[in-house]
Length: 424
RNA sequence: GGCAGGUUGCCCGAGUGGCCAAAGGGAGCGGACUGUAAAUCCGUCGGCUCAGCCUACGUUGGUUCGAAUCCAACACCUGCCA
Image (cartoon, rainbow, N blue to C red; front, top):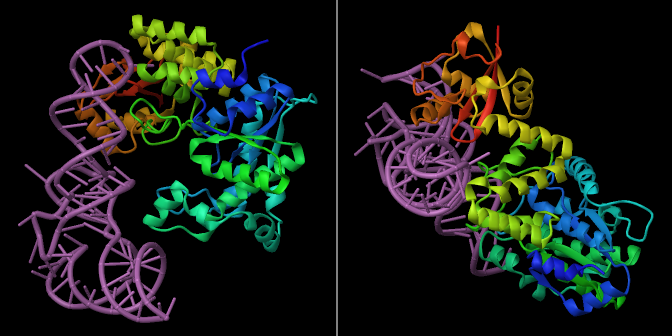
């Protein structure tokens, strides 16, 4: 018998809060348990932070339980209250489109089959969208006291600040009802979610108990932050790390994880990968002994890129990373390797006839957002062409600079590399 | 519906007629150090056809030689009252 799923979650640091774990343990041991986690379509793609609950569902599935991934087609129309303030509502069409997109993404992380542990995909719009208001207020609303709802941290903060709309205030009831519906339809008895979801989740636990007289369980997973306490996945220049390869390229995704701080690597390996405790400890030891090898970071990047983008794509981004970050001369790369690397990084094109300067090249490659930023980069000493620093704004590439007659490898700072194709 | 206060750059926040593309902080970005790490220090941080010009301080209009700053209307937010 392998390790108990709850013990695994514990050593991986994946349990932030929970209802009675002993009771849950008993239920997990007696039979396959059905559990769920919900994901709201707040953008056209899931991002790296969503992987924690998603992979947790998979961990349960591998341990012999049945996961339900819930796409929040209805809750996404309302918006979970945040501390920062009221959300802007998105149109129903847009939310529906996003729901479809994230449902496809969600489906990739669990296995579907006819066995008792085969996963299910649900959409809460199925039971929420057409529910009459009176039914909602009588059957769901009656079980909640506003007094308790006002006690929730986010609500308290919002009341102290700019206030909160009735719409967002109601969110908790919708999520609680989701749990009830999934309990009725599929016997779902465990909900996972981020620790910011605790209030919503226990509201569901309470509702199931009151309406069905059944004991439902809850586990929240820690909100992933780096060692500085910053929200995970946000430190790449402001943007999020999206799962959608057209929004965050596999190369950028891989690079993000390669750059993980030493202090975070082990923790991330535990939370984001399926590596064993022993393997992770070995990687941590390696990082402590020979930090410059970045073994833990590389493994983390490899695992996550494979998980999200597949083994083939991972092979390509590793090759591209080696070509561009390697000690070797870019000139020595053979044409096929160079072309392959250029296919992974952002590229732009510029006509030779325009006699582009370094500023034009930086802009064309996309490593800077504007000419002003390009000039700044040059003056700050952060501009490179083919790994050679360019300090003059007026510098222009010559025929001899073109790699294989067409490419210039443009770089901003240490790690923002892109290609510019010079067209004749 | 009434009264009061508010709306500034990615975020927070100063600025009450010219010296304001707008103090300060944070984030971000670049450099040095190193290891494509952290910490630290330094620099930078609207755009462009760049010693000039264009956009920008909720929106629109007005006063003025000149407005983020004054006036009016409108929108939104907060609080108190109804």
